[in-house]
Length: 343
Image (cartoon, rainbow, N blue to C red; front, side):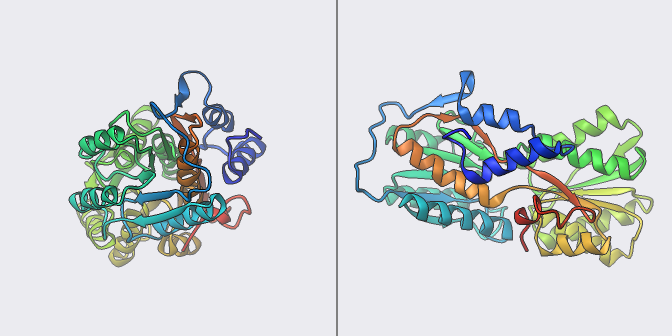
């Protein structure tokens, strides 16, 4: 095992090598990135001085929201790693993933508390560029997670390869509907890198590999279950023969499931992203075909582990791909996948 690879990441990498799971990241690519070799290495913070021995570092973590169990799982992973590393963390996020300004204000408030390092998952990958510059000037290491930031300041980004994972979702949906029919998309946002990549990865794969599938204009529900449910019902009302709907995060997918259930449509194929109780129950009942799961606990662990490495002036890779799996009714209880699912 590479000395820079944490156990959860190594477990996923090893599982992928052993199983050859279709549609998943290649473990060899992940290991190469974590090793930080060649152009992938982001090095260390310019002028870095290792944190004083005996000091308990404070890491401020700002997520994209608090409304979904996904973020609570990330928080759990961060807390676990902080206890292991001897660090103190705070974990905050806006009430919903639509509150960009609220998130920016939280980041500004966190900075006033002089954290030793910052973990940040951007709702808007461009809006925080000036704050990133401020953090760079104060020599505060920044670790991006889930969604990257359009700035060279973050030393690394711990996240799922959302574009590749979305392509896997598209592949499974296309196979299920026989590579033809009309498909709708309910996307959580169009400002974060995860929202953009989960939309574009899905669309690009369909256009290239399933030309007989007609893709409708993506609808945006801000990751809100109620809004996403209404969008799903509108899609079904306008297109009674809709073959499939894809929801790009926990809230979007749960909303699609709710909308499909309320519409009474039993034929449309639903594919989602993340997990949560609504999706797990829908997959077990057959209302939802399947979904992509990330590794939220592993993401949280990587944020803290990477921040600690930065504070020790250790090099980091530009990206840490935390992996993903496709799961459906046939493998939802697989021991390699079940630990990554949350209610």
